[in-house]
Image (cartoon, rainbow, N blue to C red):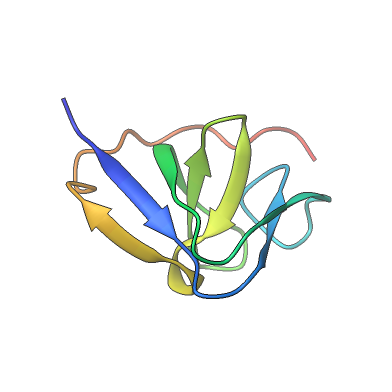
Length: 79
């Protein structure tokens, strides 16, 4: 079992898929923490984390805590 969480320093956009070409669906508040449930390489060449609630955040704008090496890869949803 893995426990991987992410926390942004500032408010960041949460998207409906792994890429900025997906719609913004929510805001991830700075300082709050969410569990990572999947990962996918975006069309923008960045690694994106899938969070609870089927929302996505780019990996380079959040701080990672825990064991994230074993987070399963997921197929990106249709855009």
